[in-house]
Image 1 (cartoon, rainbow, N blue to C red):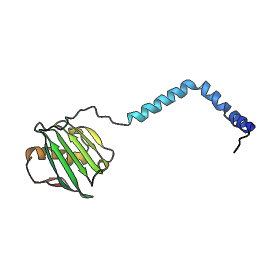
Image 2 (spheres, helix red, strand yellow):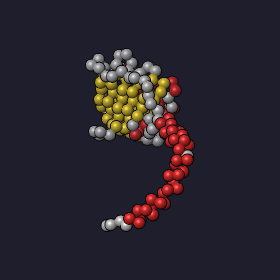
Image 3 (cartoon, rainbow, N blue to C red):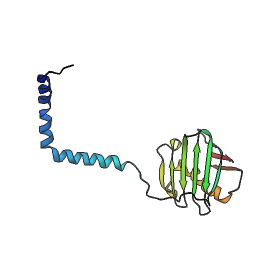
Image 4 (cartoon, helix red, strand yellow):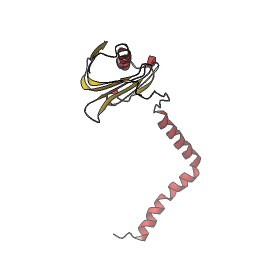
Length: 164
């Protein structure tokens, strides 16, 4: 297909007023782009807290979790890791490669990610949203009873049943 030279000139002429507007309003355009970038990047929460990485001294358990609340019942694979110093990790998945919930926590700070956690959350444990309080209380349960094969914990209308 061959484009006529006159057609290209007509198209270019149609965009000439826009180039004038951009030249005249360039400072405002730059400011608008800067504000838009700032608004978009400020919506994301970036955790600056650094959790301890698991080492050979951490205890690791894998098994099944049955989670039940008033609205949902979930059964999935659970991987729990915790240290003697109070660091805690919980990963709940449904089959290989499908992580439903990933929780990392120490004495003061927590981070929750995954599809089951919706948009996720990170911050000081005492400021956690109400719907995460049961999940964040699991750390203490595992630290106080590290060798149980079956661990049942109830918080409000939520029940957590782990089998290792």
